[in-house]
Length: 111
Image 1 (cartoon, rainbow, N blue to C red):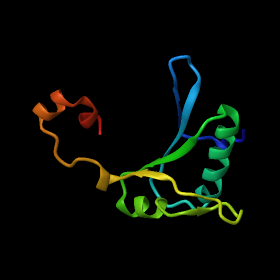
Image 2: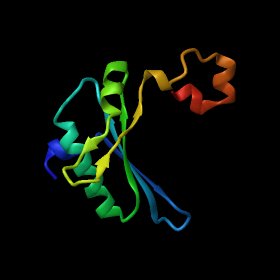
Image 3: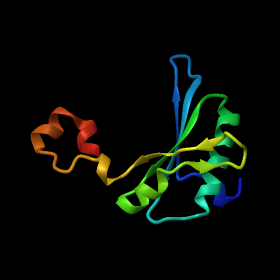
Image 4: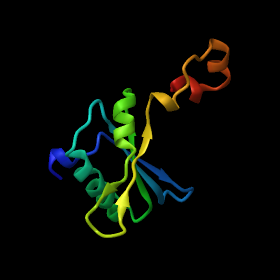
C-alpha cells in the first residue's frame, strides 16, 4: 500500500483462538488535514476486508480544534454510508492524575 495510505498504528484484538475480532486504526493527528477525510474510509475498508471483522478509526490528538474537526461525519460518496472516527482528544483525557490514583489505575496514568 502506498505510504500515504498507511496508518500510524494498527491494533488487532483477537479472541482466545487467535481470530481477529476488532481492528483499530490509530491515527495521530496534530493538525487538520483534508486528505485524511479521503484516506480514513479507505484504510478502514481495506483493514476490514483483510481481517474480515469490524474495524474502526481512532484519531488521537492533543488539539481541541483538531479533535472537533476529526469528530465529524466523513462522507464516503456512497449514499447512506459514512464514517465517524472515534476521537481521543484533550477533553476526553483526565487533567490531573495523582501518584496514588496512578498506582491504583495504570490505564488512567497512561492517558
